[in-house]
Length: 101
Image 1 (tube, rainbow, N blue to C red):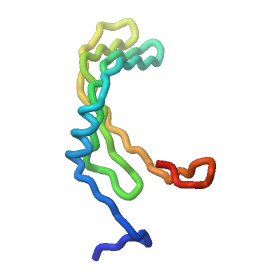
Image 2 (cartoon, rainbow, N blue to C red; image 1 turned 30 degrees about the vertical axis):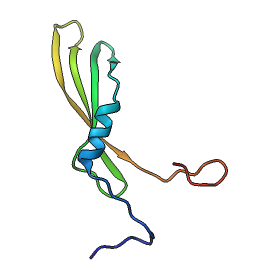
Image 3 (cartoon, rainbow, N blue to C red; image 1 turned 90 degrees about the vertical axis):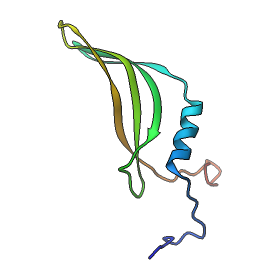
Image 4 (cartoon, rainbow, N blue to C red; image 1 turned 90 degrees about the horizontal axis):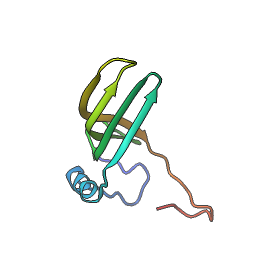
């Protein structure tokens, strides 16, 4: 049985449509993460929504390309792949008390 959990209106969008929207507007950027003496440099190449979220949790992935991982004084290691994370969503109100968009 479908429930609206007290809401009058429910909107739905297909995940492939959202991912297409994200891909069209994404601007690649460089990432530098350091935890001395280790370092990761890579290009962030795109966001996407991936399976695994539920309720207020959104599961997303950030694709990494052309990465170089340096572990201490060791050799550089070429890396690429995706970083997956879960984001907990909460309702935010504007300062005037209205709903934020």
